[in-house]
Every structure is written in structure tokens, then in C-alpha cells.
View 1 (cartoon, rainbow, N blue to C red):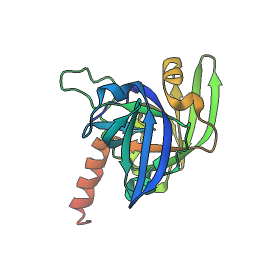
View 2: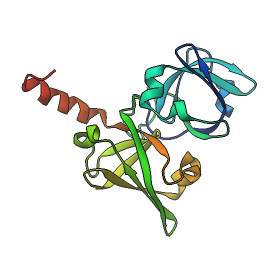
View 3: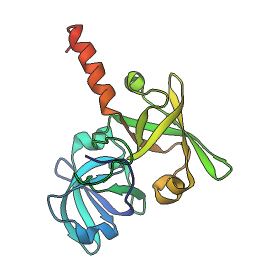
View 4: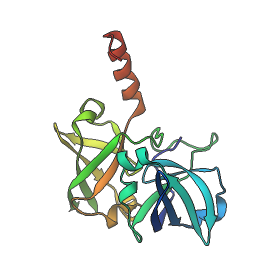
Length: 199
């Protein structure tokens, strides 16, 4: 489990095809503290470290993960958000982020507002019931609060620290971002579906 508070930025060293998926290598200072089998959230996607080499971690991205997320479209040099799993004795500063991405959205607008920024993200129709005003959403693994919501997009405000310490400053209009909705909403929706006899 993660908090959505980005711990470190990494840089994609390579993304190459592997049997049934991709092999992803990311240069990061975190490589010296990680070992094979450890979990790491990359742009909000929980991955398993396969190994470390020359200051980089190596992971495998399965075909379903590549399809659902933006990881299969990464290029060498791309900046990614990284977070290690939360420890049981740590403060919970963001929200419960599982690293199980629900789909991708698209950046419609990035604009400054004094020292703050506004981010507008278009989201897929399947997520409409899971995004609420003042609710939490993880965008590329960043824990953010929905400030405005329409039937096909939402706005979040970015504070200066988050702008500087995540990959948002390297993003542009039209970029794909990973979206994970609040897990509590998913359980509520599932419970309602079960009561109606839906699978």
C-alpha cells in the first residue's frame, strides 16, 4: 500500500519488449535501498523489483499492466514518480493508494495561478461514479483532491512543493496519466451492485 506522497523522481533508462510484456529500467537513488522482490510504485503502478543494475531498478511490466496504464508508452529519458510502500509505523499523509490503476486519463490543461497550478484531466466514462468533488484521486501516483468535476473531466490544484517534487513539471497537454480512484468508493459501488444482483 502507498500514500500518494511521491518519494523520489526517476528517469527511464530503457523500456524494451520482453516475452509477454516489457522490461523497464529506471535510474533512481532508491536503487541502492531496493532488492529483488521489493514493491515500488512507478507513476502510481505497483511493480515488483526484478533486480538492480548500475544505479537503476529493473522491473517487468505485464501485458495487462501495459494496456491499462501509461507504462507501456514510456520512453528513455521520461521522468517518473516513485514511492516505496508505506511502513506500518509511518504517518499516513496522503490517502490509501493501492497501486492498482483504474485507467488512464489525458491532461487537458495545465495553468499557473500565482505560485500554484491547476491541472485538468479528462477521465474515461467507466470512472464517472468513482470520482467525487473533495474526494481523493491518484494522478500518476500523486495523491490529489478533486476541486471541480464534470461529466468527463476534473480539476485539481497543485501546490508549489508538489509541482517541484513530482513529474508534473515535466508534463504537457495531451499526456496520458494513470488514474486510481479512492478504494473506499470502489467497495461502496461494488456493494450496491451486489445488492442489485449484478456481478
